[in-house]
Image 1 (cartoon, rainbow, N blue to C red):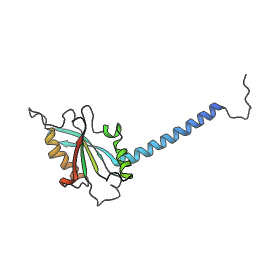
Image 2 (image 1 turned 30 degrees about the vertical axis):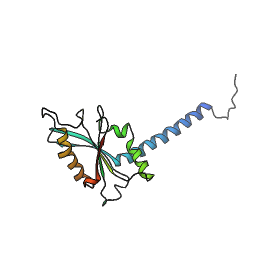
Image 3 (image 1 turned 30 degrees about the horizontal axis):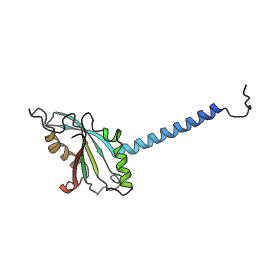
Image 4 (image 1 turned 135 degrees about the vertical axis):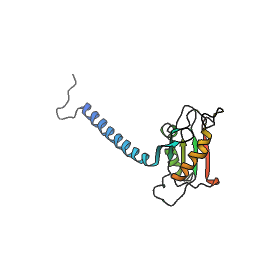
Length: 165
């Protein structure tokens, strides 16, 4: 039988105390991290007249966006792939955090990323005319982003990219 000195703290108590400390630190980090993220990655909707319904989108704002109200930023329109949506690039790929690190390290400049929800459309108009996804992107989504956010709307400051296209 193992003898424990009555004044010696129990190992399970030490373990629980450590776990509680780590849990508190994790929750604090989660709360602070979510607050910072929530200020810089926005998820919103807009009414699409062409599709006759609300469409979701996400926008990544670079680190200096809130501190530089006069600055205009280049914009990247990022089109998600099949079976994904406007949230997958940041929730699964943590691309927003990667961009922050690269900007912080001076590897890339700051820019806005706009991600429209495109369902399984591949952002093309349907042949039968029932859904006009390409038209939505060109006539509704791009103008929405450029009128809502401080985007440098010149041709040289716009880009388009995507996955699984």
